Image (cartoon, rainbow, N blue to C red):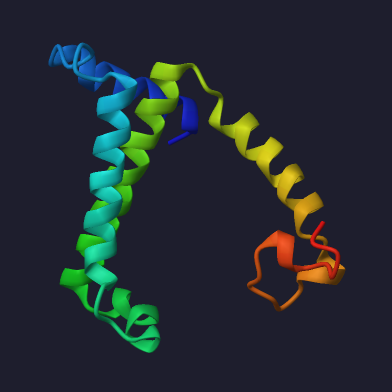
Length: 121
């Protein structure tokens, strides 16, 4: 399924149920946050190694897939309601991050961009 098709189907799903009136930016952002919390809960007490192997258990793998799908659905709905082109916004953000995190300074480091240069820029 293409991105535009997913967006259309989610919009139709909400409209068929008369949910568009509940799909305010505030409510969608809160729902998105809740779904991210449910995804986080799956990983909460796992070691880094266990988290890498989470998809090896079929039951847990299904939970992860469903929570990821919920996160995506609410993100796509929020963008739709706010008329944000997520693909364009992602492309723009990649350019911004490329400038903030130049390869020669960021490679192999998890530091925030303001800690990559000695002068803090």
